[in-house]
Image (cartoon, rainbow, N blue to C red; front, top):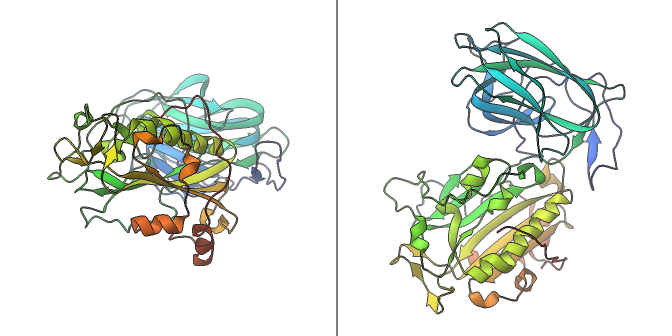
Length: 449
């Protein structure tokens, strides 16, 4: 995939290369030989502690409060090692079949005190994690190597969590994974990818206050100062973004907006007759507390009629997640159009809180569906399924289905003035954008909106 999850950049040393296919794991899942013998992170680069994905020689990892350290004070074998601070972690974003053991070298950052860390494993592709064996503690800045006997024939992935030491920094290097006898196999499964891979629909940038580009780790958006809502939000969805984090419900102003701009607060919606409607859904980002919490920034929220938000719109969100669970990844762009909606108070409403927030006329969405894989743009072809909808922001949509509001992307582009697949080759783009989706619209029960 693309935006590869950044974690454990240490080595994955395996004794064999593999070219065989595993066909019994998940639909459309393939396998490849694991890349890289000892590499010591020498070709990896991540200079900041902010959470993000990083492609290492062995595959894609996710780093949180962690980076690739190369300073004189980083304990390391070679020129680089992983450096983790506070309660940071590094997490593998792919599965391996047939692991005998994993060996990890660890030390304190030179000049810092000691800290503790745990090895966690997941046997369900990162949906849940379990601590493995005893807690480890550094003993100064000299490397200690610890071996964990795994003996797992089924799929598994690893995470290293720093659990104590506060500001003391932890260095990790030389991670070695050995096989159970048969060649270990890396499964090509879901990762966290580029939230703007399909292109910037409105060419948003930092110079236009009504088409203002905001890049979050969890999604990308174009904000409109005059409307106090996003024009659109773009995000990637796969099972790699999913987890067990509870909904935070922490609706709050987005303090990353320019200081002079009005920042919407949750009470702007009080007694308005409209829900605080997510564009990027909370349930698409429950892989961690931070991921979920970021969806409650008011820049990701727009006034949405309750029957729209809680009904067919929620059905479409749940349907998208079911598609991801079936071995696919999705690129989704959602936004608002026009002015004036009908909420639960009745009658047409144009603004909230004396004009501070514009109520949209409709909510629209574009969904591009691909099987799990890599080089996504190159894998889009004329048969790729693309769903586009434009749903009136009215209570009267109650009892209708999201499939009733499908249209082709060409018509949605005429309505909005946006270019939704600008990174896709023009010939393929032309074919896909002229076609109205007629695929299944199965309703999914027990969803959260």
